[in-house]
Image (cartoon, rainbow, N blue to C red; front, side):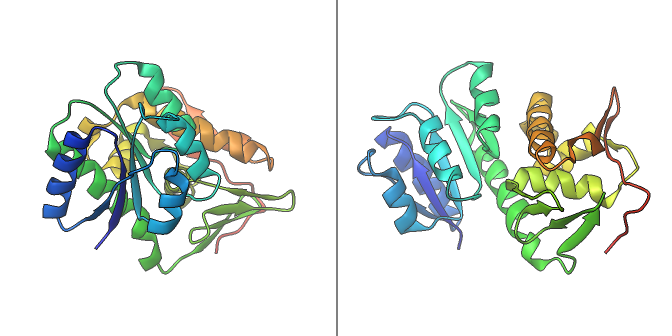
Length: 232
């Protein structure tokens, strides 16, 4: 049973979501004191966090930053505000997905299932290390390492890199990436993929690898492999 921490201050909506998710066999926990979100996060040890943007004390962006400073656990944002910048900000802070209120419950459950499937299926893979352009990609630790240093990736960033590295020197279309990441492209904007790739490239820049993630205009992306690199 997956454990979900639902950070939502609308008690009616919280109870409705909790009841529906409990019916899908999820273990849902809430927040009683919105100044103690991190304490509840540490105590609960959830598999997924669903968080509203507008909250008492501090907004959801603040708590996303706090969670990301300690954990790569998947985060799904909820928002009643109709601002495109909210989605961009969410992705830049490391959220895995974003859903606009009001929403159909089928859309919410589809996003939750896709995230959990994507994140927690890694442990069943036999290949956990991959070499690429002189670096080691660790699928279990969510890291990329080379002689310059190590960067830690979010689940989305790692999944994107994995898809590209597994087909290195080949173009992976935006449509293929979106479908692999979110299972059904109807539930995600094209801009979300762009934000995730840009964030991945920025992290890789810090160890000299950002240039090896190439944008193929009108097509997709490619992980370029150096000639003297080898596969694991």
